[in-house]
Image (cartoon, rainbow, N blue to C red; front, side, top):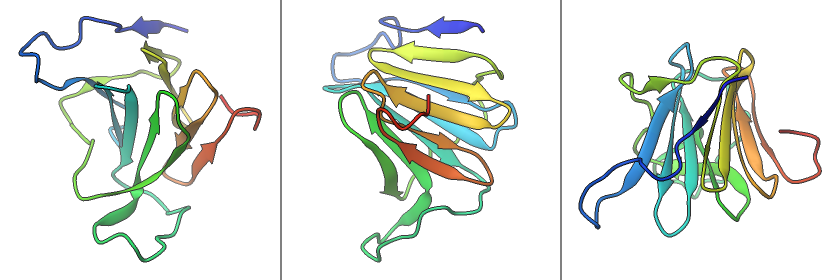
Length: 139
């Protein structure tokens, strides 16, 4: 397994600039980024999928296509009107993983997963989306 470490040299720019690292699955169906702000966060979106989560009716945007996990919190589906899909992003090949300040994301033929160091995270594929917590056997 090849591990990609992108710890500090993400985006050199003005202090107010958002630092992030964008990547996608080999198929391009899953697009992700990891941001470094006050708290590191990973977000992944699906282009095509069979929804595993239903909107509670409170989301006025799109729901079920986007998932996020913070460096310290739990993961979940998010209400979002934008997208993490970027066809120009680096491909995270199957068997590779990336670790940035407390968040690890890894690519497998079965989909893309991201988790924080506490074991909270998500796994996404076209067929199924899952959120997991420490001790649930994922990751």
